[in-house]
Image (cartoon, rainbow, N blue to C red; front, side, top):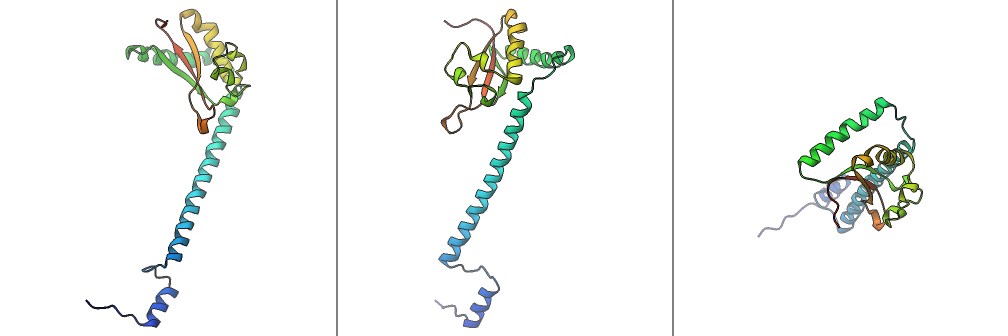
Length: 170
């Protein structure tokens, strides 16, 4: 077996020129740390963007919409199509709305605890959706339930509204 011999000046010149053909353990640890920091920065940037989008959504959904007859038709027509498609698949419930628990005055506590007064905690568009069910869909035989459907970090997160139809299970 032949030993590869390099001239001392060549090795020094390669290191000075930034040739990464050989990294010391310290260089490799430093590189790994820099890569992990870069990934963490991307992750933090992504989390910041996600939180901003969530705050924008909360702000938009906190503002009630003007429920003109035309707007109501725009809401009900796709809902009817989704309900029909769900029924054709043999389903007896459909999630019709998802929203952050920040749109509940108690951050979803009453919903999580099945408190019968949970509708009183709703604000903004979720409140309007509840009122739409109460005023128009309940008499048609639909039931509405609200559940915490997301548990980030073990804490209540998003709320889901589910329209149900068909026989109730006792």
